[in-house]
Image (cartoon, rainbow, N blue to C red; front, top):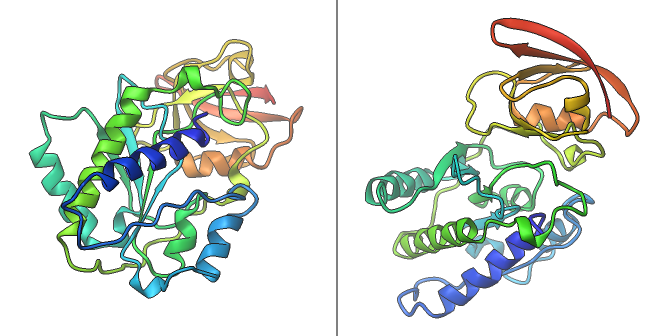
Length: 274
C-alpha cells in the first residue's frame, strides 16, 4: 500500500485538485504512473528517452514515492531534489514563514537530484525535480504493507502542500536547473533483507539511530534496542540512510554478520542473522 499505492493515490487526488483550479492557466500538467521502477527505473527511463512531449518544455517533475506513512510524532517528510533549482529554496522559505502555524509537516531536505526512484530519470535530462517520501518502515516489501497502516490524514496534508507548490510555480518563470552531488543510492538498494528496526529520520548524526525494534526480527534477536545508533553493518560503515540501504542490499536471507552500534557512551558489537 505505501509502496506505492500511496503515491498513485496522491497522483490521482492531486490531478483532481488541479483540474478544479481555474487559476492554473500558465502551465499544462502531465500525470504519469510509471511501471518497472524497481527493475531499474524502466518506465521513467523509457519515457524520458521516448517522450510524448518536448522535454525542453518541461519545467519540473514531482515524484511521490511512499508518501503514506507520515509519523504522527515527528511529521517528517523527506524532500529530495531540493538542490536541483534555486527556486525550490525560495518557495520553501516563503512556505515555512506563511504556514508555520498551519501545518505540522517537518521537511527534511536532500539536495541530490538522484536516488532510487523515477525522478532520477528526469534529473538526468537536466530537469529540476522534487521527491517526496515519508520514510522506510518494517513493512517495506512485505504483505503487511497494507492499506490499514496508511496515514490518510498525513498523506492528504502532503498532497495539499504539493498543490500549494504547484500554485506558486504557476506564477514563476521557467525554473533554472542546477546539477547536484550524486547520491550513492541505487535501485539495487531495494534490499532482500531487513533488520526489523524503525529508523529515526530526524537524527542528524553519523549512523542510524533506532527509533523502534520489531519483536522477533533480526535486530531484536541480536539485542538492539530503541536509542541505539548503528555505526557499521558487516564491512560497511553507516553514515546515514543511503549507506544503510546500500549495506542491506549486500546481504541475502540467512546471512550472518557483525553489527557495531553505540549505546549511550559505549560502542558495542553483536552478531545479526537475517
